[in-house]
Image (cartoon, rainbow, N blue to C red; front, side, top):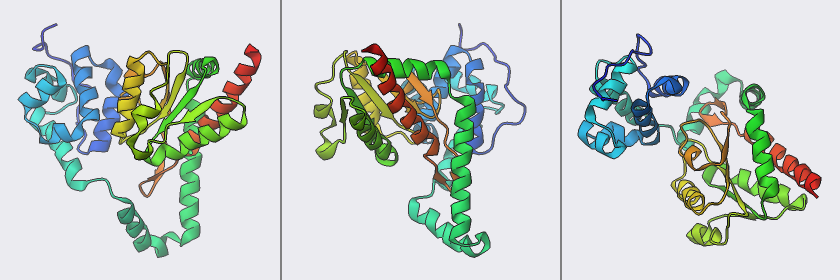
Length: 285
C-alpha cells in the first residue's frame, strides 16, 4: 500500500497535551493501518526521539517513509507532523515531576487538602479506582492462559525494576511459600543476564513493567524471548514494548493521586497469579 494514500482523520480537534494524545492513540490504535500503527508504537516508545529528531531521522529509525509521519499526524487531526511534534516537545518542557517535586507540591497544598488524612483519602481512592478498573477490564482468557503457562514451568524467573521491583519480590515470596520453584532476577551488580542464563524453554519469565519502561527489563525480556523462554508480562497497554516479546500479556492501568501511581491492582493480580498457579499445578499432579 502506498504511503501517499490519504487517511480519514480520527477526530476534528487534535490533543494539545501529551497525555491526551497518548490516550487518543491507545484508544484508536487498532483502527490505524499497519504503517501508521507502526509510527504510533514508535512514538509512544520513543517520545524523546520524536521531540528532538528530524522527520527524516525519525522516519528512518521507525522504518517508515517521511510521508507516513505526515499521514499519521493528519489522521490524528493535526495540520502536519510539525504540529504533532510540538506536543512531544511541550511534554519535555513540562516534564514529569520527580518525587521531591511531587512531595513539595503536596506540602504546599497540605492545609487546603486537610493534612495527612486527606492524603490518605486520596491515595485510598486512587487504589480503589485501580481495582475497580481492573475488575472490569482484565481479560479472563489471558489470565487463564497465563496461569496455565506458569503452572507448566519448571522454574519461574521473576523480573521487575525500580517502582515495580516490590512486585517481583512479592512473587518470589508467594511462590516460595506455595511450594513453586521461582528465581528472583534482582540484577544486583548488573548481573541480570547471568542470572537469566540458565533459563530454558521449559521455564517461564514473569515480568512486570509500566511506563516509563526500565531499559534493562526490556532487554532481558527480549533476550529470553529470543531464546524461546515463554513470557508472561504485566504491563500497561497494548503499545507496551513488552507486548511483542510476551507469550501472553495482562494489562493493568493504575490510577494516580498527585502524580503518585497506585500499585493496588498490580498486587491484586500478582496474588491471583501466584495462588492460581499453585492451584493449577496441584490439579496437574
